[in-house]
Image 1 (cartoon, rainbow, N blue to C red):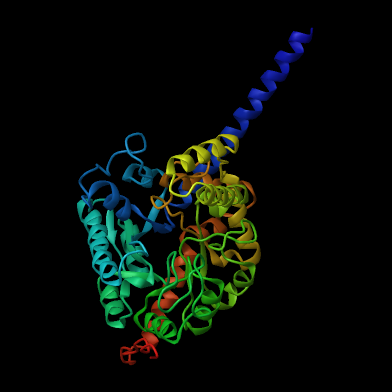
Image 2 (cartoon, rainbow, N blue to C red):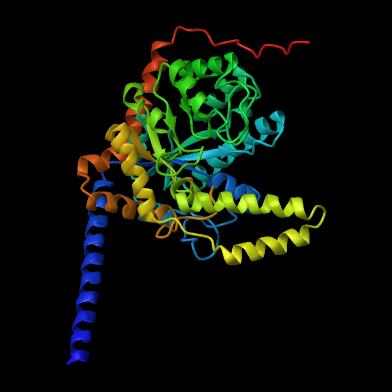
Length: 419
């Protein structure tokens, strides 16, 4: 009798799991139908940098037309982009903040070239877009609208002329900083120098407004966020950031700023990096960094001892994993605080070392959006987070630029240092 009861429980459990899987499949199918008529536009993908690091910027070194999940560490390929319902992609043209300014200028232009060569190598799949209308046109042709975003204001080498040249080359947003504070803007992960933006930093934002280049506040300090939103005549974006109230990382957006988004009109596009979406992962990383510093202070000049100590620490403190539920929690929080019109998606694929459980690459979007639908989001809500919100912001930025068509290009320069 007892065995029969156990068997019945097991059958019921299997049936429950099967029903849940069937419901998830149905939700994902609904999402993919929505994405046939509304482009899902991801705000930040580092494939050009991944190709640079691993394949010498050779866009033919791997066959992007095949599923590369099993053969490479890449999160991105055409098969998975299509499976993910991606209709628009901002390709990040990132170079490290450790480069000299002249190196950053040269190599950012090289990264723009790489992005354009990716597009040219697969014309049946990708089409370059520099305006919201062009995004719509490329998407209507059945291809993935491909846009370019700069990551790190150091790449303009304190020159508004270079900013204009990058815009002319196709860049449609610029992240004002990356991991380091620049000569005119404070980073979220470095010591502040300016209390936000310097006067030249304000001139950069104004010139971006005049050009029609979106002001991206991912990576910047809270003071820089506030200064940029005060100075900018157009809505701002966070191309790949999450919510600080959910995960207390300085890279994330605080509620104070989220509450300002309705008035600003901008958008926060959720990042998938585990340390930004899981408080457990963030705290583990901070503890790991502390242990590494402690061991280095105890064993100066003995890297082997440090390595052994860290191996023992990690064995005793296994790396935690972020989950899809963590990602959904950030999306829900931004919606709750900023509103449905101010949330988007900017995963940072191929720019982060690990992914949350349940996410293997750019094919993950139907699972993420299906989880939102299962939580009560409507089809209209899904269309907004997928692409409508970002297209609205792009059009607002373009309209601001059009209103400034008679303004002359700025000749502002950084004030020389006092003797």
